[in-house]
Length: 140
Image 1 (cartoon, helix red, strand yellow):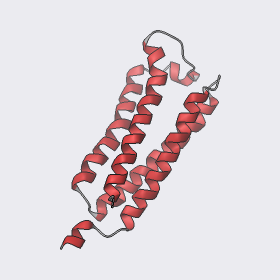
Image 2 (image 1 turned 180 degrees about the vertical axis):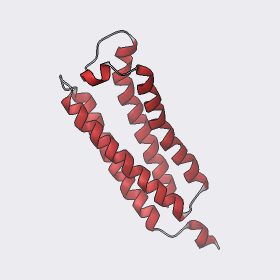
Image 3 (image 1 turned 45 degrees about the vertical axis):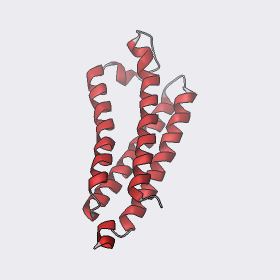
Image 4 (image 1 turned 60 degrees about the vertical axis):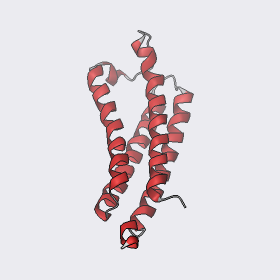
């Protein structure tokens, strides 16, 4: 039987790969000097801040995966569930904002829908893990 941690690690990995693909779809043309559809508010923002933000967005799930391998505590499960909910909210907002960029880039929208669905599944499995008995208690 697959543990909740294994399911969550697989889901976070798929989520991060999808996020990487979404990022590359937007950044690759930008790095090659090609114009991409970016809302006017983004044009005034230094690209370094965007890249630092993306790095933070990647690091939190990476840390969640590492900690999950070594920690099965109730406190961590609660923190993890809150993290998945936070990412679901961010993904929903990102999806809504992507719909406002003209022209609408449908392959990006499709990917955001997939990422949002994976995020919802992360929420469900994380909640199940929170409600499950600790495997350390079962061993003792």
